[in-house]
Length: 266
Image 1: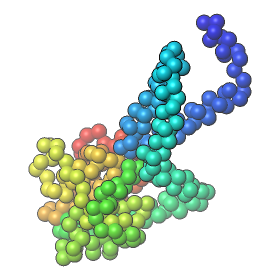
Image 2 (image 1 turned 45 degrees about the horizontal axis):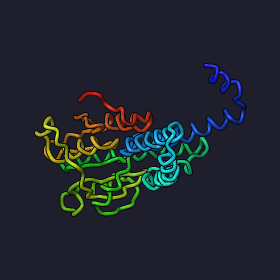
Image 3 (image 1 turned 120 degrees about the vertical axis):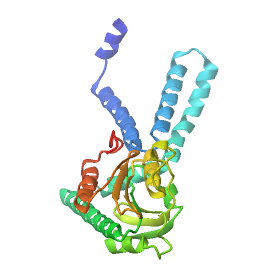
């Protein structure tokens, strides 16, 4: 106990700043990985590094201490390599951070994008044309983007209706939207294996399957019934009209619910 008081009594302002900087680094790493499939891997790596470092400092084994001191730099170098996509996306978001005017413009662009998707979904539902529209959020979907055809276009209702028209080669499978732009069409999504959804069509099971593996938001239009649905976190809310669809999408984008999502099927 006296040693603890001695340490506390000898802490200086530079020591406090040093501790806060270290804490900030770890906080930034977990913040970047939040909502991604890499968060468990990052936590595991941090635990391994901390355990190895403490063991090398506390245990009186020279060989083990030498091994840890030699391999720790390699582990630290591996972190940006393993988490390159998450780091890149975080730096991109940081670069886009601007004034309140920029935030207002971003919110306005999001509302316009949602309006275009809602109008397209409404028309597709009336025409009984099936659709699968994916909004990428924090979890990167590049592996699914690469299964489709690159588009890189603004989100427009007319373009979405054209893509999902039955006579076009891109209508089957999904469109993926990233940062307010359609990045790819005809993308193959994973289908859920949950027996609860075995009676649903392929589009709906694909929407559920993707949201089970990521924090994506997926709009589905049934080709048979024309029912509009939204999937998130492995759950689905159905029978949406154009106004309620807008409200649901705006709620997710404005409040950034992330991985919490729905806790029950609606």
